[in-house]
Length: 164
Image 1 (tube, rainbow, N blue to C red):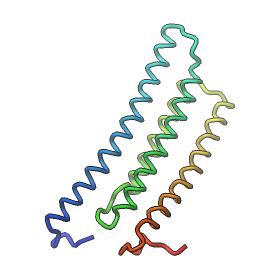
Image 2 (cartoon, rainbow, N blue to C red):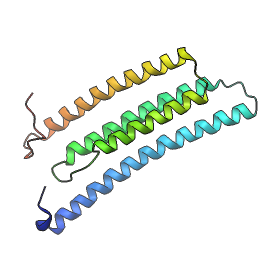
Image 3 (cartoon, rainbow, N blue to C red):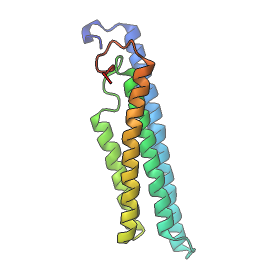
Image 4 (cartoon, rainbow, N blue to C red):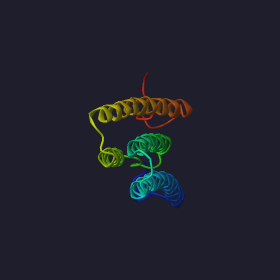
């Protein structure tokens, strides 16, 4: 990255475009995550108020599964953006962003499990889904890093090209 005193207008414009693209993509994904979870919570509340035969555990399980999928999507998007543009723009999807995403995911999963009154067997199933999701996340992370590194072999940044 260029020293702050020597940044030209083109570099600033490029960085702003990258930040805008990253922010737009991230916010659309977070918006979808919260909209679907909010809709599912409303459906669960409506079904309990109207005495409909929709098992809350079914809604909760679906919402937890969706939450894990969206977490993976947001994670993969963030890592891809970070790897693609780290030479131009520092700080995309940093450690604090990953911790916030994982914290929100954990909060939503626990909220759904508590709202559905999960028993021990349900917690075991959810734990298995979360462990499988975490393993998938690790594999996806590694695949994205390899794909980006292979796509940009002339990268000037030594962090971007690692020995295999």
